[in-house]
Amino acid sequence: MTGFRAVVIEKTDAGQSVALKPFDEADLMAGDVTVRVSHSTLNYKDGLALTGAAPVVRRFPMIPGIDFAGVVESSSHDGFKPGDAVVLNGWGVGETHLGGYAEKARVPGDWLIALPEGMAPETAMAIGTAGYTAMLCVLALEKHGLTPDMGPVLVTGAAGGVGSVAVALLAKAGWEVIASTGRASEAAYLEGLGASEIIARDDLSGKVRPLGKERWIAAVDCVGSTTLANALSMTRYGGAVAACGLAGGMDLPSSVAPFILRGITLYGIDSVMAPRARREAAWARLASDLDPALLSGMIKTVPLDEIVGQGQEILDGKVRGRVVVEI
Ligand code: NDP
Image 1 (spheres, rainbow, N blue to C red):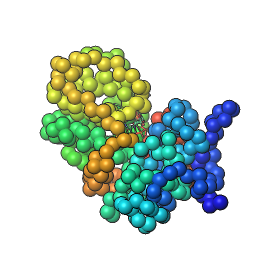
Image 2: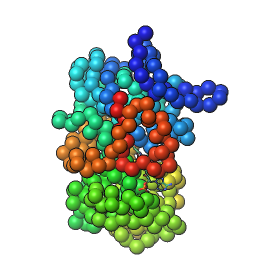
Image 3: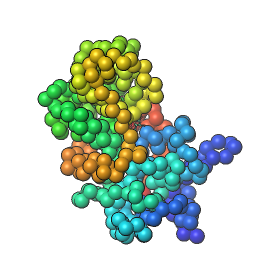
Image 4: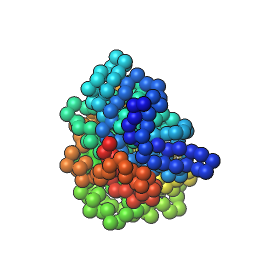
């Protein structure tokens, strides 16, 4: 048996258990590329998987970890050869396909993209799926034709992983960023990332009016529910909102008013099945636009044997910025 260390989720009649243990390479799933994983990260979805708080894991045993960076160990895929540095986000890894909290991963090569030139694997995972999703949101707003001279942009769940990277990217691009957070203690952190104004989470989580005072031309929403509904109702005429998260709930108690009376557009952002060209565009922009100094201020690094305990932390909204897992 060729073994390596992995975090493994198992399910029995007694419930779900999760532990760091040896895993046999022969039990890895089908794929034409085997990667020696050096780094992974903690995403909200990983918190759901580690704790079993929501049924994101669809196969047992499962190695969680929806993203990873590492070096190709063996490959029969045309696009990759041993020694290539690669990054993976999504595609059901950590949900239906064995994931990144392990020393090795085997995946279809079509799921991998080359690590951008000059980017270290720990940087790629400091960005992680959260940062890549933030970039997808920014790209959607840009594609809509929105520019910083048109007005401010709102970021909700701002002190979380997606939110932090979104604030940094948008501020760097010249936007006036309004950051919404439930943690007033993180105001200085958010200002350090470039936020111009901090508003309280409660400002957006209350009763939703069909149309509110027009405040921002664009928004990146990580929260959903009444927060997204309020964000829509306060978006200026012709603006757009990129919705990627549900940290506050899956519902959307909105009305058609923002759409039919203010011409607002709501973009749904999915990182998991995003086509390759969009992924490569997002990673190229992250490599060029994200200030490494800001990124290093956003991260906490934990070894593989401590990641299990972090699952509840992210669900409780206690994680600031990004958690990098060093394998
Ligand atoms: P984090 O937990 O790091 O950030 C979420 C943030 O949302 C928290 O930090 C907190 O920000 C805020 N928040 C948490 N709970 C609540 C609540 N009950 N009401 C209002 N705000 C709340 O997670 P990520 O940044 O990794 O992910 C954010 C969301 O995006 C998640 O829902 C995740 O599932 C989703 N996501 C979606 C992807 C996609 O492909 N569409 C990809 C990646 C993530 P603060 O303390 O500042 O208020």
